[in-house]
Length: 320
Image 1 (cartoon, rainbow, N blue to C red):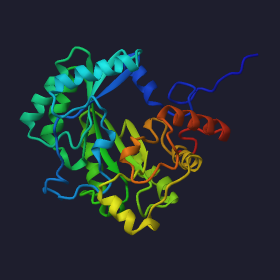
Image 2 (spheres, one colour):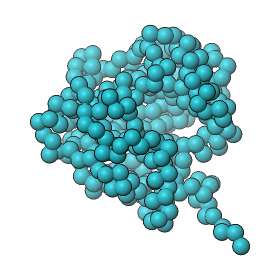
Image 3 (cartoon, rainbow, N blue to C red):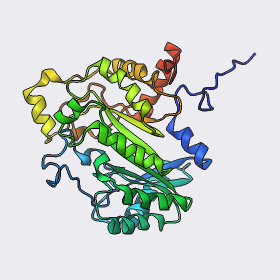
Image 4 (cartoon, helix red, strand yellow):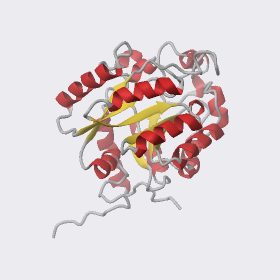
């Protein structure tokens, strides 16, 4: 007899609540993000909060070649869709992903003009707005709620990075965790989709702290969550700190990182959609060679799923 595959609370047989399945449920097919650089900056760079920026930050390391802040939003969308049509032929709909820096850090009148360009393209089904928790207010979130009320997909994605205030101070984040909690709650109160980004391995955080933060993450009314392993990039304050205090930093072998992430994943509530659990950046940006080598995200997912099966575990197994 054929083996009967277990179905998990999110409705399929994958051992975690995957981002791809999330969009299939919402849109009925594959959805692809198109990264946009709309020329925003950051209050942690221009002196409003700080002039040094977060110690780990190098936006160029995560910006695709077609994303060019010198081009209009409309042109970046056109070039991004062309790029992805050649690479991912199965994509049926596209989301404009405003990724670089803090994409709510302009007056509301300018935000209306920027996001209006995105929705002017017939193939754009929605927007994902990456920003900081201290760069939203009631009026801006009301504007995004107006867009969503017109039947458009609107997600606000917050860079939270850590639930520990001591860590946030050390990396010069410029806000505390309570600020992130308020921003997420304000966003969800308007019915907007809400995501968050966390970095695993920031200096001073132990494996136990990384696993224990599941409780604080579960308490946030998030739809999606994205995790990256710490990567140190050239010409950043963190690169200088690493040179002075290398003992404060840890870089797991790939197998050890996957096991650590699984310990966190087991404690995350089943409703949370896992967008990713690790990140990649071009080697030219790295201060030191990656201990994992040139492993692409697709391969990382295969390794994660194989390890989940070996351990016979899944997202939320230890969630109570």
